[in-house]
Amino acid sequence: MTIDRITLFLVNMRLTAPFETSFGVEQDRQCVIVRVDADGLTGWGECPASHSFGYSYETTTTVWHALKDFLIPHALGKPVDIAATFELGEHLRGHNMARHGLESALWDIVAQQQGISLSKALGGTRDRVAVGVSIGIQSSAEALIAKIESYLSQGYGRIKIKIKPGYDLDIVKRVRARFPRILLQVDANSAYHLPDAPLFEAMDEVKLLLIEQPFGWDDIYEHSKLQPLLDTPVCLDESIHSLGHAVTAIDLGACQIINIKPARVSGFTESRRIHDLCQARGLPVWCGGMLETGIGRAGNVALASLPNFTLPGDISASNRYYAEDIAEPLFALNPDSTLTVPTTPGLGVTVNETALNKFTEHQEVLDTDTHG
Ligand code: OSB
Ligand code: MG
Image (cartoon, rainbow, N blue to C red):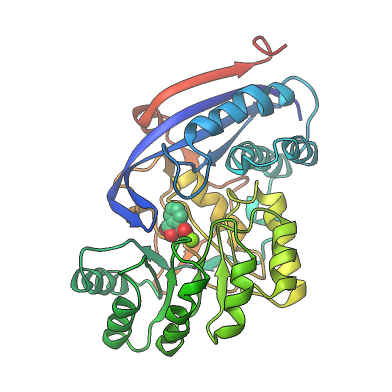
């Protein structure tokens, strides 16, 4: 394809409630939306970085820089495909969320050109994907239990709770005592270190589905020392940025499950490679979330339709995040705790440009005139 024009949107959308993790609290969610116009078609992607550091070193500012000053000038006005864009992105040595935003928009266009859904284009095999809900840190155990009750009554069949030092074993035990049979998992977002291993050994009795990213955001070694001490599977999120990291983690026995977020690993191309590796090595994967708008959510749903995504994803219904979204139709929870995979060509959602403009703080058009 030949890209004529790329438009970047700095978007700010208010979450229906603040979302607190071990690295901070967020209510006004910034992201960068990428619109690509090529061969008479329009594709969309989302870079779910935040206004500030926390989950990773990427922010909306670094994403903008990587896209505007490097990726986009090299992509405009000459024939490009997804493989070439992936190779180009490798030169960045990181900035995976920026890469993902552009790559997603290209996948959207390629699937439209083939007249198939993104799910089909990626090799998806399911028409519905199992999902759960990720619940931020609450003010008390009672407040957390009330939230869980509310999400269970909405039909969510898997609950993930965020933990941090001082809000961990005791809270998790109280939740388990109140809900003895639910599918329950925890996410520490890198808040602990190896000397905290006894805390996680004590969690074995709580019968969690998995413990997500207990140790450093870039650590694999300490996790490899923890996993053998536990019956509960360790799941890596922050530490896995590439296929190479996944190979290292599996070879070292650092985890038994991997959370794949396309934005964290540079896009759908690398996501699929990690998916295939895990399938061959016997590890289940699931699709994580980054509080995406309907654009990023559609991509996550498509990815989660691949066969080895056998655990419920952090891809909740649109109304769990935003009162008003920028893409339609909204994703709604089915009674069996699934979301339906779109079947129309491409991402399968339509961007509501009125809503997009309303939430856009800044926008910039880059085209072959500016980057001839
Ligand atoms: O660690 O999975 C995480 C949200 C923002 C950043 C990191 C994480 C999360 C979530 C929410 O857990 C997942 C979602 O529902 O989008
Ligand atoms: Mg996580």
